Amino acid sequence: MKYTYHLLTVVVCALFFVGCSDGNEPTVITAAGDIGTAVEQYRQLLGGTNNGGDPGSKGSSGYREINWDSLPDELADPNPYIPDFFNAPEAPRARGIVLNTPGTALMVSADSDNPYGALPRFGSINPQYADSFKTFSEERLFSPVGSNIVNITFFVPGTTNPATVRGFGAVYTDVDTDHTAFTYFDINGNMLGEFATPIADNGLSFLGVAYAKAIVARVEVRYGTGPLGPDDGTNGTDVAVMDNFIFGEPQAVEN
Image (cartoon, rainbow, N blue to C red; front, side, top):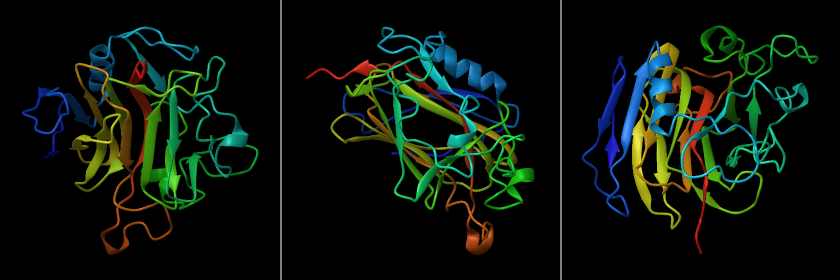
């Protein structure tokens, strides 16, 4: 169930897929380099309407998006990110997404005028990152620390009620090696599929996967082949971080 793409153009494809719990075949959109068209195609695939950050369900169509740039300095590098920041019960933070990592922390990179003097684009962790990591939307990026894994779960925005979505997509920066980027699971923990992001050394990549129905309850995201750190590039380790997250409008799980 692993699908690998090495594409430097926008691709929209329905896959011959084995393993979906209900026979649902995903549509995959990928791009590397100039990814703007692919990102917009994915938004349209999810319904075309940005449902913003208001609490509660906005129906079965549209998407929620995070670009990290609205975070206050106290929740960015050198400080950890709060896992449920974008599931607060009030606008504009009610997006219905909670992030966790088996590592030591989640982190959003500093902006250029932060009061802590932290270098932007995770340059405080490794100075070379400030030059090698590019952004899609200025100017913050997101990554786990102490691990290259993030687990994403969905909720009816602004509540603790579990939800499922049609799909999840994200912008990667500096993907140098072939590796699984996203693994999707349904509400029962069954794997729906694994997908790789295209390579764009020192550039931007996009991977978005969408199903016909809201069946995705969790996404495991891999950030390269190892965690951020001073030893990046040794022993074949490649790191990659993320910019914008885009996901389908969360739908309440029916008991």
